[in-house]
Length: 165
Image (cartoon, rainbow, N blue to C red; front, side, top):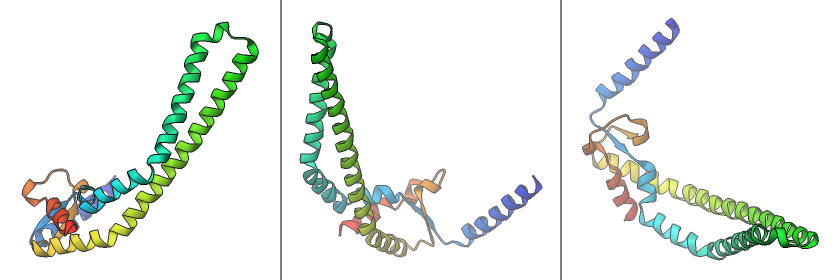
């Protein structure tokens, strides 16, 4: 317990000293800044177009599976055992195909998003530094790391503006 108190006190002294030494502290919601930029909007539209066919195919297979399930529910009691078995097998195949395609789709979309983030990082870092320097900020913190901050210290929109130039 004593060890924890020493660590806490040391941390407060270090960060408290840094805050006092800083001329100006500001925050940025980095995620909002990046995803509000024109580049992110263009990327999102490109992604929708690029994966539209895959999305339609997944939706169609889901609808086919739903129809098979509804048919079993509605007419299952009146079907012959072989017909019921055939439809259940077909439904299972559709469910497997749906799961496979959906997983593949999500993996591809996530990979493209990660690629966008990786490609955007240098430009984002440059925008953060420019905004910090232009606003004479000594410490720029991510909004997620703060409990409360005066809205006047939020430079997110300025970062978006720099990213859009």
